[in-house]
Image (cartoon, rainbow, N blue to C red; front, side):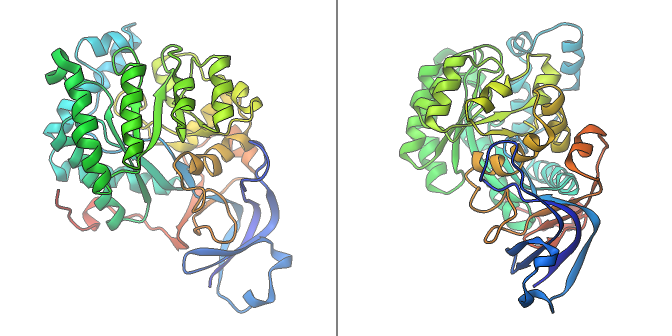
Length: 416
């Protein structure tokens, strides 16, 4: 039963309190057994039952819950650097999409990618995420957009869950865009999602959530409603990409379907915020995408003031958010969205776990939760966000085990 000591400040990030309450404890200790936290608090109050247990040192550093990235598109083929240049020259995201770029381009590259390509890409990214203190990652499909290619992504996530330590949470995003082969009959694609793919993937346990991108070049409100309600019938909880490029009444839709989260929300109006608050929907702030697309920032303070828990995530994808650096997203949520460092930390731990239904397992440091911890070489979380560095994480524990870097070649092969 290891005991982690020499903690300058322990930020528990408990569900109690609001966005800014992160429950700091100075000169702290954490004890765990078989990967589950047994006790956390001031070192001076460590129960006598732990006195003879082995000691691990945090080196006088800060300790936080393992970070939770609750919105990523982990597995994809290829990159889209040329589109980055186009946007810098004034071509809009929507215009690039209409020209066959954007999600459609990544769809082609992902369909062409071999299972080994996707495996190596994903394992490399996960290793780098762990080094930043990330211990739980939500992973969406949505770049295959055919039965075989979507199955390939979701099967990959299932097998990644078995061969490496990060907790992988899978989301079916078949409703990312309508693939080109269905352009002339988009209803046939919605039928495919609702009548075949959702029942199959839910029945096989390949996903926990069903997500829809509601936007001009993606899916309408009415189409999203049908897809999400079908997902609910098969046990997939709703999630939504909404109000990213304009106010499309997406927040109200999230409330209507009782979504676990609504993500992006840059253009959500006051009525949508009120509806989300009444329905208990978690709002997810994705500032890296906002930065890359040059959009207006999510008005986070309105959500927080309305009592909505606001999570912070990367939206890691090859187009609008080509970075998996969650601490960077946290810093941007401070500078671009107006969260305080404490609010950003709560958003990337406790509230991010709630956005993917893992708040009973991780996201806070308290008895019964997994011993997922990150050790940070900073004086406090204010300084962490203020004096941004590439990485200040010196140790990451997943289920109580310190993680050492492992290359993709060090993991077993997978069969898709």
